Amino acid sequence: MIELPQLVRDFASALQTADAKRPQATSPTKRTYQPGIGPHTEQDTIKLVLNELADLSPGYRKDGLNVRYPGTSRQRCDWCLGEPPSWDWAIEAKMLRLFGDNGKPNDNMLTRVLSPYPAHGSALTDCDKLVSSTLPGRKAILIFGYDYKEQKVEMEMEPAIQAFETLARLRVNLGDRFVATYDQLVHPVHKRGRVFAWEIASRE
Image (tube, rainbow, N blue to C red; front, side, top):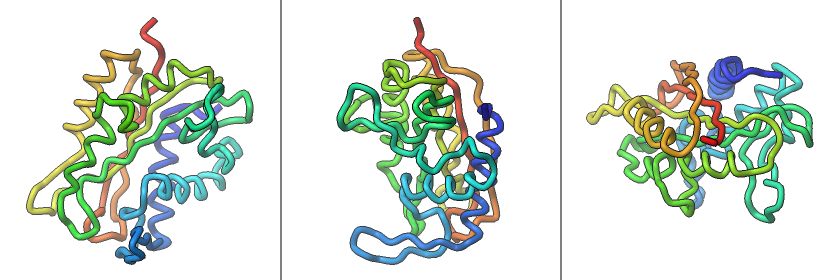
């Protein structure tokens, strides 16, 4: 079984490897963004990372994305590791990208991490969804994103991560924080960042 500290290190390494291939994302209006993994959507970034991870270990299965929660028709778990159907890990992943491709602040991004409303599908409400589910295996929350030091308004992930930890501990048993960094990325705005993960369990 892949343990969480190793998964975090592998995710960071695979993200950097995927970025070095200079992938280019496109907007819904078909605008092509600048090269680099940074402008890609959350789902597309995870796919790019998993393509690289699959070469590292058989535990990183390409068919482990968007696994249906038992007993539901629509809800999907972002990422499962191990062998189906008795997965080792069920992981919900969120991206924290506080600036856009154009270098302007993305003011709505914190909703994806901190919103208490299930309709927003935040990392916070994903905690509840995971621990109340009957998906097999251990449960974890993963947040990846970018730190900005060269912008007119400096923004790093740490304050948002601390806020998430404070709120999540009111809802679930939050395990130790594991973190890995990546830097020297291709994109001129999304140059560096970190990936964080915590194992979670019911407060009961």
